[in-house]
Length: 341
Image (cartoon, rainbow, N blue to C red; front, side, top):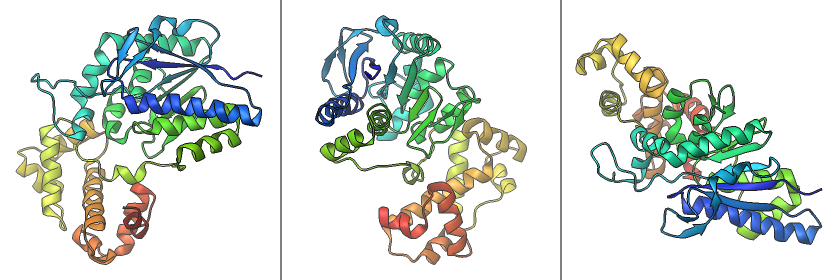
């Protein structure tokens, strides 16, 4: 029995590495499938233009986006949109690797005509019985299509706050690398596109083919992106919450209480709590834990301090308390986290 057709939807500016990972995995899967006597994969690239320009300047030929609906439903794959080159509210190109994941940049890309057209076509594809898949910022397109409501999903951890606010009915688990919920499959940060494609190859061609591809490409299995999440800084544009985070960090190991922090920010405690929840989707207490986790990870990576000393620096009485924090936020003990870093 043949595998379903894969439709790779690519927009102008899409992350080249994400597209490359998609096509390379399918190509190597076919080479392995032929040797193992398994069905071959069929795929085609559709895009917002006949000649697409990817994030690194490379070009790619594509069929029109409108052709997504042609033929029997198969598997629609949306790689990371690629947010480089987008301008901020002042018309400037933001600097720094994390700048692309600010709400303003992501929302402006999502509002563009090609992204909205892709969202509409993805909805129609899914309604016809197709399987829809996306990684990183591509998951936002599925949200615009109305496909995330009530679904368990993942995406780039830096987009977590935006996803929670814009699609509150989605059940987001940003620690996961790949999440499948019915005919919807989502993956984490941009290069989790590789993990997404290996997941699909394993399902449609079997474990042997997937493992052969992993050996050819020297890809290790990665079930979580949790250890990268601890580095997550402020992935929002709210000055008040940024200042609150700064107050927490500079006050460690004795973090300010809510009342004192609110006074310094010239707010009531209730207003500050509401502001934090609106921006991050979490309580101030959770935000304090996130700031502690970021500092702990920096200390684990960049110093030779003992685990007990690191715990003390971030405001915990002992290593046991720090261990509970790192297990909750990265699913690793402090010692294993340090070893991986």
